[in-house]
Amino acid sequence: MKETYRCWAEIDRAALRHNAKVVRDRIGSAEMLAVVKANAYGHGLVGVAETLADQAQLFGVANLQEALTLRESLPHPVVILGPATPEERPVIAEHGFIPTISSLEEAQAYDRLKPTSVNFKIDTGMGRMGVVQNEARQVFQRVAGMANIEIHSISTHMPVSNEDAEYTRDQLVRFQKIVGQIRAENPGSYKAHVLQSAGTLAFNEPTHEIVRAGIILYGISPLPEFRELLKPVMTWKTRICLVRDVPKGSSISYGRTFIAPRNMRVATLSAGYADGYPWHISNRGAAFLVRGKRCPLLGRVTMDLMVIDVSGLDDVKVGDDVVLMGRDQSEEIPCSELSEKAGTISWEIVTRIGVRVRRVYV
Image (tube, rainbow, N blue to C red):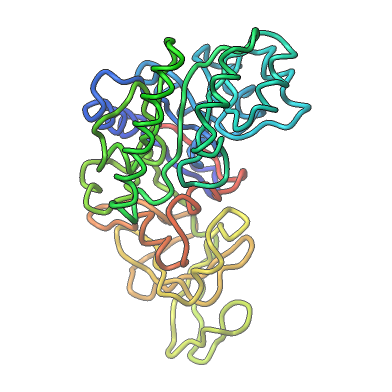
């Protein structure tokens, strides 16, 4: 029961499905590859995948371990978006997962194992994976001729789709051209995918045959102008474990970075950076919601506890719920607010939420 949790994240299944429908409305008949890597961006791998099972045609994970966890619950095709180690390749082939390959050598390694369907990645500007653009046609032709290799799809990745529209449009044109040339030279039923969340929102013509929906599914927009289309999926909560009155001049937390300017009532929360709340948000104007009211963080975030000012609230009690991220009544602390104050990105905020934070599906 919720009352026993010290720190938990409520995952709104209806919001997940709403966001998936937003994606579907924008991509038409293309297949949706729901990206559930990194524990579904911190939202819980299996719970999220089960919620989206009737809306997604494929799932995308980062590595073999995530693929194995997902396969225990769902029969959907699984694309492993990251590179595999040599030891992982036989297991990937045995389970019928779809690995992403970036080189002729990787394809040859799978070809020596057993029939394997692969995602052929082309590097058009991201620089971390993929066959370099000017070699892609030649390498693809050799891979397509291997006896045990079937090309499931061709893909690339956009590095600045939420920062540089001009570069992104040029990249999309280049990818479209390469795909057209490859298909002319190597006819087949393989599909293409490039659009991810920002691409789906702002660059969704053409969609190709598959769209990779990631952070957008969780109600977090990589482009602020599209935020209202989405519903945040996670409400991150903790509880008050102590309420104290401290006199003027009292210091609070490590480093004594906050000194009480007056007599104050403070509450200690059952969460800290070990739960994933960012330490770098300390002394940067962060706030929490108690009964729909903003209560500021005092001093530094510590490993397991934080202290907030509740002087303006009446009858605050041990056990009261506190919202770290999400909505409470008419107030909201969006993920973007936390990331801005912490000097990071929204992706990091949700994916760093720790394993001791219970995911509760509502």
